[in-house]
Image (cartoon, rainbow, N blue to C red; front, side, top):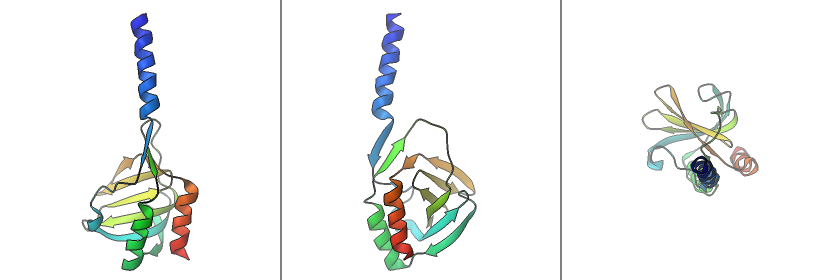
Length: 133
């Protein structure tokens, strides 16, 4: 009985300290491989409307500001889907990442891979709005 109680307490402690971690967003591919960055309105990672494609100078500025945003990585919970205002970063190989404030996904050859990261909604939307003005 004591072993079970100890194991449950240990698991609770582990989950508490590893439930989320905060850092900047790490792209799946190198930033040098990013071919384009678009601000989109997404139904999901495969269905979206491009609102704006960033120019080369805007892209560099955007990446600098985007890397300042703190993202939390979480390990517990059901998978979600990208929806609403999002950033689409397309790589030279045609694969892309779709990032919204509460979720991100990597799309490779039409297959969606979950990236369990989120950030502050207000900070994310303020960044997008700066580039839409």
